[in-house]
Length: 502
Image 1 (tube, one colour):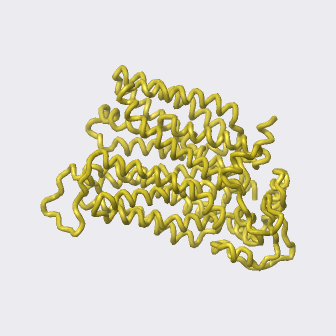
Image 2: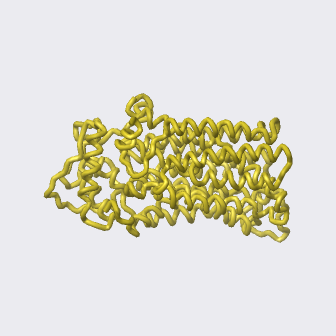
Image 3: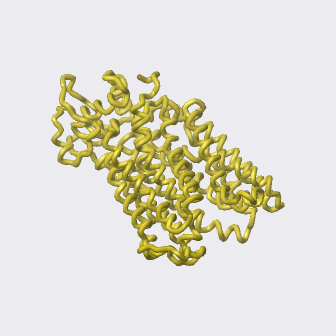
């Protein structure tokens, strides 16, 4: 199976998971276009007749709070995600997560007070925080090593297409009461994912780490691969488990023929222990056949075994947020509106189209060129574009600024955009994947908040020179990535760190 193309079912499962990423991206962009309509800056129509108010009067500061409080919800969601994904499963986490996403969208779309908008935005943030941890993990665990990067980029592709969709929707629905339809769209996306998840299997890699979960994991893998012959892949997992020095090994009964439908595996602890198969999966560090105890954050940070992976995860998450991408997007509307004044309402859409197209390019290249080279190319190109952008803003060259912005966003999309999200499940074992991903995204949300909070003040004081700071960050990151980042293309966790030590 290793040399065969992915089955249609894998693509379907990846699409369903990436609907969560699409949902997250949608919430990132949903408040941009309708701001003036929602906050009553634009007078409502005189003939408006509805039980809902036409708008909710608020100051620019209050609107900024609604936008930024999403990050607080995201932080909470990322902290919850690893525990949910490890204790209940990746699929169950995505199902459960839609409670936050659907309720948040409905609260915002039917809001009659400012407080309702705030609560709805926090709930949407919590759901998004779970998404950015669980979706990359699930995509990595259902794919083969040869296509793991391509499937990993589907997370970022979902995010950027979600942003693009929200902006296109905003062009046509930034009206009264159209803005309510924009904010309620998230409920439709969430409901669609809930329905489709009923046809998707649980991650086979997760299932085989459960006590008595081998048969369910095998059946899940067979459905994903489209063949009954998955023994070689399962054996490779056992070999990797042994090579990683775990204190237990996956074992099974060759004659087991119990029937477990992997698409319906959403199990509590009791049902896990009552699976009919006599197969036994000893979890790492678990010699007693008890429900597995996955690695928590403290264990992950303090264990020298995970130190190289921890460095890479933190490095990439910090670099992504401190690269200046949010600042560039902030400037893009102002600068590109100067260059294209007659199409100023389409500026953000154009930027999102560039982002989406280059993310597709990344999906095509990532399993051919590799993560490391794309990341280095991305960071180096961004550093040059950032320096040119700072210069062009100071010297007032709007066309050069526009070209710099497009180059910066395109460079971000091919490497620094998708790779930090997909890297954690590739460089740690399955037992630590949820914790590693959750820790990485917690750092990401905090960094996002810090940069967003400080950027406006820095921009007022430094003007275009603020991008020289981001240039310095990117140059430093380039050398650190060269030093610490191993290539993960087509490799197991053990192979990655063995090659990194040579």
